[in-house]
Length: 77
Image (cartoon, rainbow, N blue to C red; front, side):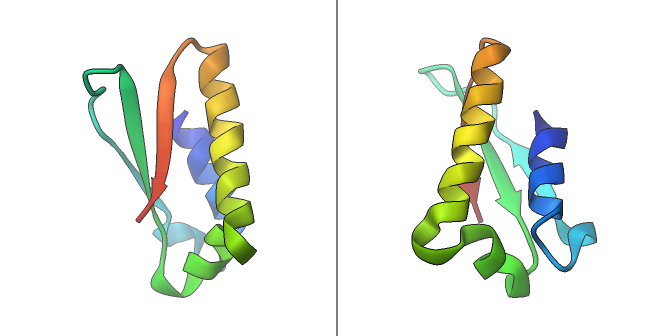
């Protein structure tokens, strides 16, 4: 899952070497939080207009997690 998020974000940014993902332990509801970190100059590329790209990333990640019977959430830091 981590590799999928890194490859999605890496394809969008100008500095793919600065893409980093940290994962929190599952909370009481069983949801793991994936924190996506990118370069400051690439934040707009990952978020997109009105958050459309960020929402698309979250949908793709949730769909992939569902196939593996996991619950995740993606936050862009």
